[in-house]
Length: 257
Image 1 (tube, rainbow, N blue to C red):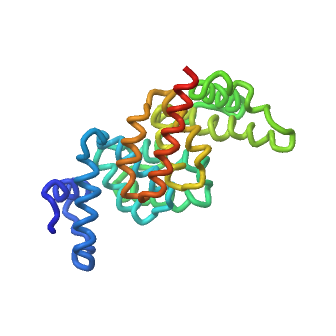
Image 2 (tube, one colour):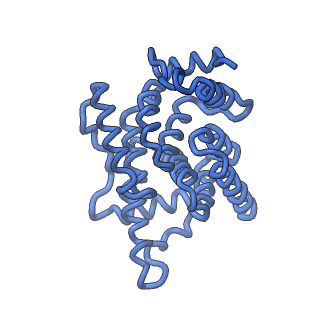
Image 3 (spheres, one colour):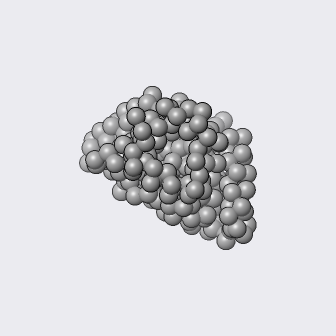
């Protein structure tokens, strides 16, 4: 078996002039993987994404599964396919709300190193739109915009001993991140879906954010395409779990109509 012409050309576009060491040490494996990930998956009828969206999803997925070495490889490819430095930074920043700084810190360091190597001046232009005074209110509005009016008072709901966490969801997760420019709501919900699908063990939240995606216009078919394009990076179990959550979200949306 040899690498397909499409896989070769796609690999060259991602990594101009680069020949993987795996071609010498693991030729059978890399031929099969590259043919799958860089030809079959991309060209599966009805399951494609535009390249920029695909690479945004892949970067978020690699953050979610803690694939730091692959992230270092794929970030330059994402930039080559049109993902902007601002979009890359926004993906990394928002990951902190869903993965925690302990898991995101190495990725933020890698992002800065790669951007600087490519001549990008840091820091990038500011994207924040909230202040300490309005971040909670604006975060609540973002929750309402995405999930509906039922989120209006969510920040002050729940048992007293844990109510502060719902407040933090409003002012930190949504007020500090979702209100930023650089990505729109649909893109932010897509990368959140990828963070959750890739890390596993978050199926209730994954279902909720599948609903959020659908509410901002990213339908079931789109989410299945995202899962399909990210499957080579997280494997079948987590991809199948994500598909189950998408199907459950679609049922919830139908029941709500």
